[in-house]
Length: 193
Image (tube, rainbow, N blue to C red; front, side, top):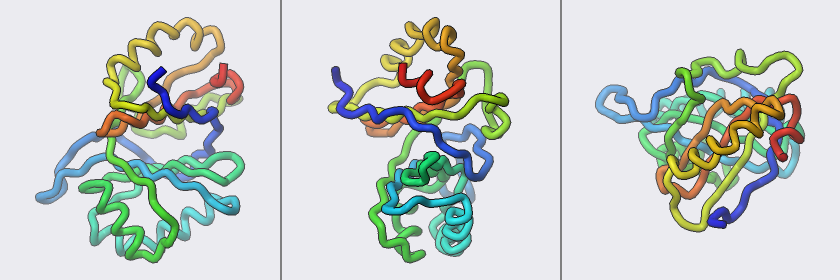
């Protein structure tokens, strides 16, 4: 298999935000792209922590053209995936450094692929009562084509239906070596199957 690491699915808590499907768009004279920031914490983080960090970084974000869109926090608070719009991943890193965030930042630019049937502008409304959001992280030894991975998932659609799993969104790195897939499911174990 060309998959180097597929982390176990985990249930992210949705902390904040609205994310509309905009891969590349212009603001002023700058083209904006989706930037994914992966963060691991030594101690559990909370939604309140993210609100403080966002306030602390606001002036740097405005200087570097970084717009926070959505934050996914694991239930144990030890890992977060944060989605931004920015000119590029380096702008995200620069903003973080200028704001005084010392921890290393794993940031990468990517594309957004929503579920068939339209743009999902407001993710928190997606989750049915009794269901949870689960994120699957994948990385690949060598670059892959999104359509090839999507074809594999399409062949497994009946299994997803059987376990009441609904695909929500994928973030796919521009270097074609990372993928984050978000699913709505009764529980995280359903996604692990």
